[in-house]
Length: 492
Ligand code: HEM
Image 1 (cartoon, rainbow, N blue to C red):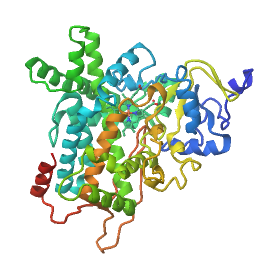
Image 2: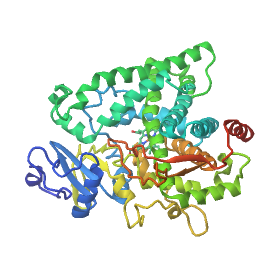
Image 3: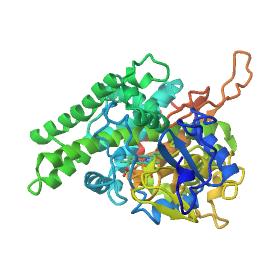
Image 4: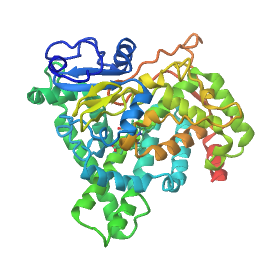
């Protein structure tokens, strides 16, 4: 027991571990962020827990997360080795890379493509895909989840490969969706910790209780290989044929031309392209699902946003990025969506590369560092009535936005989400367009009685609300497909 044998500063407090397994007892496997937040109330915002031999430091406070992962980022920028990465076929994915040269190379190329001044170039495509989302919602509002999946995926496929996804049964999207489903389900830190402690578990059959991952690795491998290779081949061919438009792959390939056209750079670009979908599509559509849930549950917020859009934009055209400055309430809604239910409730784990001491507590080298974004979002000292959806909390008395950009929802320090500016624009455009065009509300049952929404959440590393009954109706009751197409045409 490390706690007894060590001399010097103590480890941070935490619940007493069960011998061998550590702090599994009492941890809610479907929503561990709740257990960590509860433990935080008892033991303090910095917690020490253990899963088998893996030491974990859970941070429930934004201030401490910044003090460690930002101010001491030279120590806290690694990722834990996740034993399930390779079996799932995720070795290409820089999100999970250890801190080092390969990560730095990928991060640099990625940053070039989606840094604040570069993302402006993607606005027309984000608007186009937003228009398509409106058309899809008008045609079949009950399929709104599928439309959001397609919207977020189509933006990434276009931005990365300059590939226009098919509205139905797109071959690349189908394969990627299958892989993502397995990955999001299985890539949980607690599963990874168990697998790391007992690698032989990876060889147990998939039907063995708790070992669902083993039944799925072969499929995951197959799908991820197709995901990395196939769309990249599409763009490579377009480059060869001289028909390639600007996109992450084409632009990055052109940059290395003549300078460094080794296979390694090409491979890096190919892997970054696949990573963009993994990191960017599910997260964006999950956030938009949270947004729709909020609009249904908080009609007064929706009305306030629509009244503002009506006064600034009016009914005869759709909002665009030039209106953003005059529609700050939409930004407040965006921030509140990210805060109210962060789609990565436990962020993504970092790992420490040196022993450290923080406020008298010892943080061991090699510990997994878990920022509990959910607990930060529900810090009542910062966000009163934190379970309520209140965009006004981001607006200063003079009507401008405050400085709180809810960055904790995008992570910390050197590993902070590299795609956050891109995500912000995809989210803003979709939210503004949807609020302009539709009302989101509850539905009625057969007796005309309003159906109450019992919100349930998926589980895994990234989460979203499970489908809930809602009505999506055009604000203008006479809106037809033709009229909407006309509106889109005049707005371009
Ligand atoms: C609402 C949308 C999004 C959310 C909430 C989100 C959130 C996050 C979070 C919490 C992390 C972990 C940061 C850390 O380790 O501290 C992350 C990492 C990352 N995100 Fe995002 N993300 C979103 C969209 C995107 C998009 C659109 C892209 C790409 C176009 C992207 C690319 C990445 C990459 C590559 C990483 C890994 C960074 C690294 O390890 O260095 N994300 N994101």
